[in-house]
Amino acid sequence: MININDDCREMKLVDIILNSYPKLKRYLFKNNYLSDNPNNLIKNSYSFSTGEKIIIKIILDIWDGSGNALFKDIYGVLDNKNFNNVIEVIKLKRRGIY
Image 1: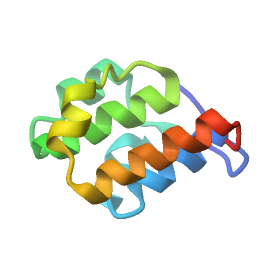
Image 2: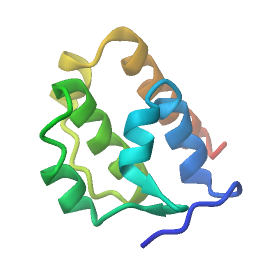
Image 3: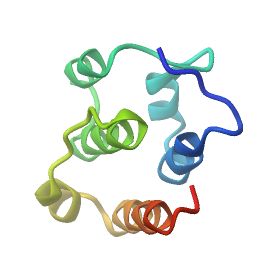
Image 4: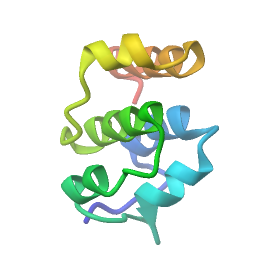
């Protein structure tokens, strides 16, 4: 399990995307830890919408590279707000800000 703290760079990036998804944040994180192993989080996400499932994969990719989000899903499924948030996270990561 990976611990979350205020200094965690990945969590700051995750928060940019999950800002408007408290339900997803509660699903992914419990008591300052990733709530389950990434495979189970993906497998058990059946009740979420297609876009939310893609966001889960993106978050896991940010966290530890385990989400396997597909580029075609990012640009083809996400709405403009979520797409722009993902692009912003990529820019921040590339610049070394987080």
